[in-house]
Image (cartoon, rainbow, N blue to C red):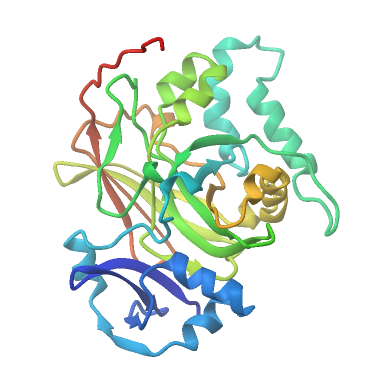
Length: 330
């Protein structure tokens, strides 16, 4: 039986619930956050699951009601949002190159493969090294800090200057850095790695700009290993009706890199091993509505679901108002 953790608001305060395979949830006593739970596990040398088991089980919780009432939070956060890094890797899935290659084909000759295709092929050849060896490094990008993490049912807000706000159904891994700089993986969550694909399509060197957006994770943190094969669905609803839907695959069986290789190339930087920090790292996708010519509109709802997660991740698209600013000399 796999353990899942959910952070939510209960009786006016933050709490954590433990969820079983059937979706039944119980309050975890004496704990206010996943971060607090992880710190306790690290300090005692126990696993996260053993730490939860050692605490008294509280009353049963109706998570569906909490979700519909907007009380479910992202499954991880940090007391200081500046100490959460939101990052990701792309071109890591066996079907991920097609859409990206189409996006960038106009900038390359017919004979010369795009940088995207070259990166993907490098992953196919060297992304799954033998245990103890280091494979080829993947594409990598930065999305923001804890202030850009959005919980389930909360809006994903696209900046006023953005040319597009599109979904990316992915799996994200969640880590807390221990006192000695050791990264501890807590588990995995569903994610919507929200991006501006029109900006990226105009010039591949604008990928970094296109990724500086909010992202949503949750509702559940799946503790332990991710299954080798993850099969899910991504859809967009407009005025309640589904206007686009497509399956997506994840898990190492469907990836050109191992998770261990992606982790190595993220945490090899000492900057990302700062004690106490939280990392949310997206592993990529093979499915985009943008590749099918869909343009999401304000008010559309992105919906992502996949086993072994028991709850869907839903977020409504909103467009921010312009925020004028002035740069002043001191």
